[in-house]
Length: 354
Image (cartoon, rainbow, N blue to C red):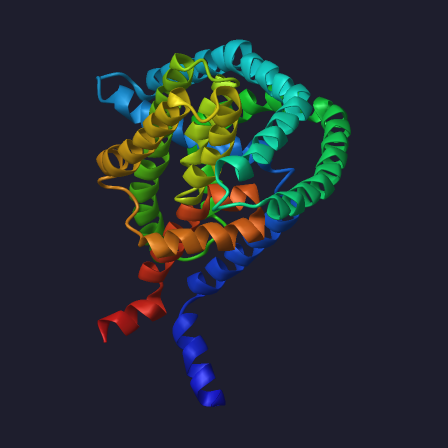
């Protein structure tokens, strides 16, 4: 038994690079577990810089120098960022503030609607079930209210931190974009040897992640704009806020679309009632989700990450429980990374060959 274990570890850790690579992965996991909140501006900056590198490469293809392409890419980032901070974010803030102030009224409207359900559908729901529902909701409401108060206090306390992040964000993106070669070379010096395995992992990751990350950005923009137009047509309350949530929901495979549907249905129900407008809104929204899943995603991600849906769902839950929001956000890239490491690991490669 001991001999088998010894042979297994010798096969897995067949060279110095595999040992160092394993230590780097463990160290990275520990750093993210303890310092994820602190590293948020760095993580977001790296993602944005990675997107800008793709834009830069496209601009270079028009016979422009790499430096000129970098300047243009960074300028586009600054213009888009300025537009978001001067128009979109204030709009979302106003709608979010309006929603928080409207919560008591929305809650009362919801309870009034629920109280009419037994009369409308006596074969499905009786008054006793509604009473139990009211009791459960009332007990939950007090805890939700307390959490909102705590969150508001925490939000006020963290305002300075958020302002600091806003100032740091474009500076970090600038350095990650313009000085990325020196940063990458500095990181590579940590790993000794010819770094053959690392090169294979990066090649596979770069091809799939570039398609995935840039494709996701395009999908978010298209879905969010389509949802915004739909909600604007129906004059749905909190339309901009809900449209942004619909756009961001595509980041959480399968689960995101379901979760974001709940507030849309509730707000639509309270605003329009069980009438033609409500059914039309829900029908068109479901059509948008269908088009996204069955037409837009296959079109955008034709060359993207090739993972089974079960693996994707499993990755969302595992990494989400480990790292919270960032775990969900990076669930597919992390699953792709594991797949790339598995394919490139020397010991495992020999097993495939046999």
